[in-house]
Image (cartoon, rainbow, N blue to C red; front, side, top):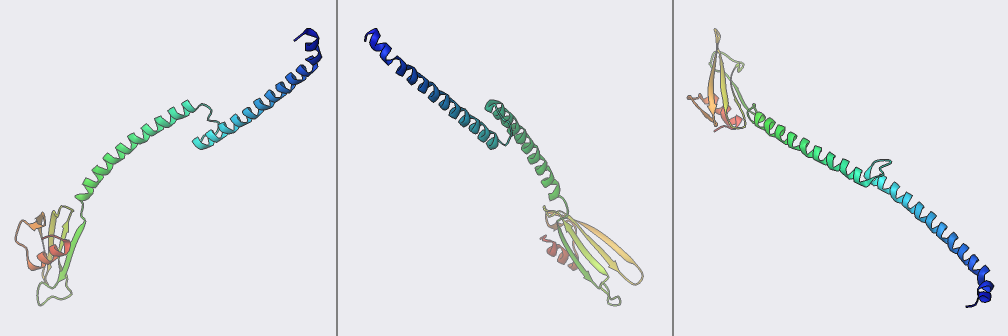
Length: 163
């Protein structure tokens, strides 16, 4: 191409360059808008307004997860301890009211059995008469009495789930 031919098309080349520059600026503006939208979406997804750097956000979340795992392990240990303690608390009860003597009414005598989840506990019997009240206690281990039980104590033990 000669110099005269080039000069003939020079105004068109400038115009084409201008059009390409405008197209590049428009493309850059569109990319910037899309990037801004993506950053806003990321911040919303991570639940933090203005969460710019994803690496910092992931480090914070990783640290939070590690802390939650530590808390969970502590809570599991506490739950185990409390469950063990609760299994030794009174959780099974049997109670029987009766008249111990023919001349005393109102079923003021009673036998009560109190057991934990291991079926360990005690039987308490209170016998009411016109002149006195007597109270007896007997140990229960594994649902079995360590001493002979009266018929009433035995019935209360069956109510509590022993035997």
